[in-house]
Image (cartoon, rainbow, N blue to C red; front, side, top):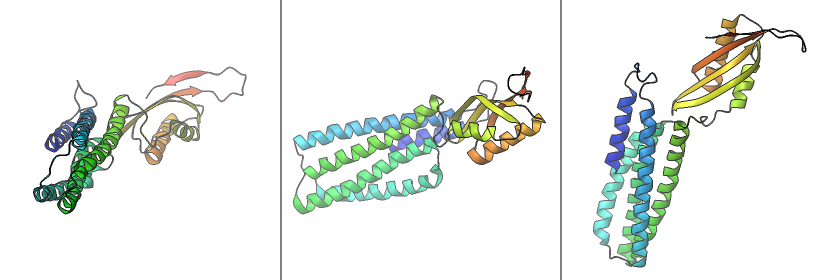
Length: 251
């Protein structure tokens, strides 16, 4: 399962590097999200298998060869810990690599638990510890998988990225000179590291190019949103109650 998870993540990374074309104007960045979703779902499957085996061994304890278990688990722990450390340097906010890392970390935790269990089996002959530790590992996998699947589904449904509050974004834009109001504001993630925004800005003072540049700079510096589509709508600055002239200036 680890080989499958790492291979899937690598394939998604290679796809994401492919340039955009006429058929896919956003490129292949969403491949990373699909890979994370599949890895998260497979973690649920692994956890379910562990639960079934764990409960079965609680009901009918199976003799465990402690020394052999200790040797194999130690080798597995070292290998998985090394891979996890390599992956962690590059994960960041990448949901695809986070899914692969969870697979490896889950195995590392399992190996660590098995090492502990092997020591207990060798010292006491208590075989129940194998099943108890397995159920604990299953719970950790479910928790990690749930977070990955949740984040992947949010991106696929074009939900607002975590840490970005539309009200704060709108307030920052209306504080710019010349911007009277903001409407039709939409913020969504293309993938875990690319955030898109579109909005209509009602402007009562020009020059309009300066307003647009100020808005783009604010979005980039304060909210790390650099892929934007802003439409300016001109509104006269006449007092309230008088006729208001509006015309659209598309960019």
